[in-house]
Length: 255
Image (tube, rainbow, N blue to C red; front, side, top):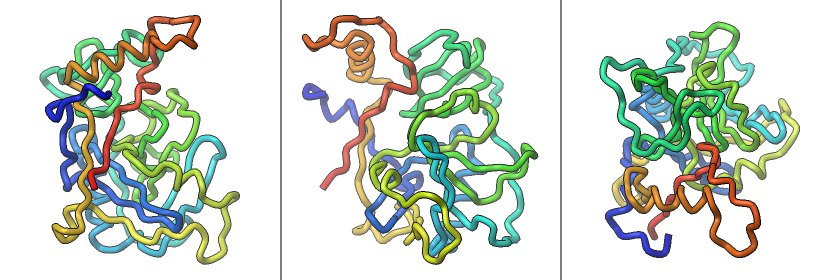
């Protein structure tokens, strides 16, 4: 990390930088239009309209998820067609393959900073259900998601891969999601969402600048290798393996 060069980082596109403002601080997330364009567009439209402002982070599964949105309030928002798996005629090239056949995917690795799984041909790609993943809640129907988003705040059960649309991840501010009150409550306000915006919807001088390590860089490849076999003297066992979800892609907020 100390040896990283400017070319090892990429600037997060302001169109894809989501800013969730809670009482204790700001959570920055990057959305993933490559694999879930309809869900990204829905969040952008709702954020621009101010839909989430004053709503709540109302549902928790301790050690797993925090969910926000309208909750039981009635809305006229149309359901979305699911985007569990992105189908492509040509294979999507992984920036870096980390594992073959991890039990949930024939192969897994990274594209544009997001942890993904693929079929062997690379023509089916989905974002992994890792800690920090941004997903859209749904009912029993696969096309029943509307506006209720959630963030994985603890253990990430990979058996949810391809059962729900995952369309982004937390870059910074996870501690603010961890500090939300539990259990859920119908009182008002309860864990209010002060605002939810996209950076490009702000004035230029208000737009934050965040860099993410390029997952196609040699520096990131070296970082993954170091995590597989930790070089610090404290470690006795070195498994030469790392779960793709355990490989957090570094990000930096510029002053």
